[in-house]
Length: 350
Ligand SMILES: [Zn+2]
Ligand SMILES: [Zn+2]
Image (cartoon, rainbow, N blue to C red):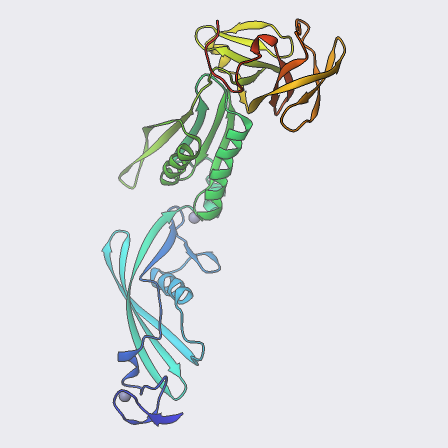
């Protein structure tokens, strides 16, 4: 479009009111993020480029991610990117990006300085080949008890979310072990951040122990074990151990527990307690509607639901009020001594 330049007044072709000379000084048409990350595999040297992991020169790699990240006006006819770079340090490059932009009736050149950060990681193909490669182990345990299935699920979920997001991260191996779970991860940095996030979500104490694993390219390579210990049991908690459901009456050595099906008390040593899994549970008051020697029907005072519960053999009832313990593994009767004790109360009992 023939017109005149709003900046210098020259007549001729203008783009957004500016002539070929004034346009680059007044408007920036090329938008690129100031920092770009270029992932490279530490094992095979491929680059993660738009479209997948490929062998490439560093320059082509940068050019490829810069083109992908660059935003240009829609009415641009054609463009050509060229670049030069210099190492700032081992992992950082200062890149001079020059773009020749073909616009209706004129061609302009724009330059941008960007920083490219080189990230070393492991490409999916090398992950598969190096099946046993790992930099860190995340161990999740709980004090005095086993992890619950929900806790194991939370650990697994957070890790798989990270693996999904991080192109170089993978799980080498996962082990269900006595009381918890071990997950072997390809990146120590990721493992560190994952365990911090797990502690934030689940609580507990976090410790780490690095061990010198090997030397690679003159550098010491460590493998780090992160141990997250989740909080243990509290009095009043409901636990499952070898298929039986207990309520913890008092902690200590040994701990005193009540078998909710049998209705009698029992002691458990700390080693045995370690195998127990804590169940989410709550206590509610209920009213006995009907019952036999084996089974009782109890209506709870919260939702007025009627629960069929097994009658503990040693249960002796006074009146028709009972306390129910509602868990994911069923509904149980708390023995009558428990009546009057507040739901979830953690007072110590003899
Ligand atoms: Zn002008
Ligand atoms: Zn690779």
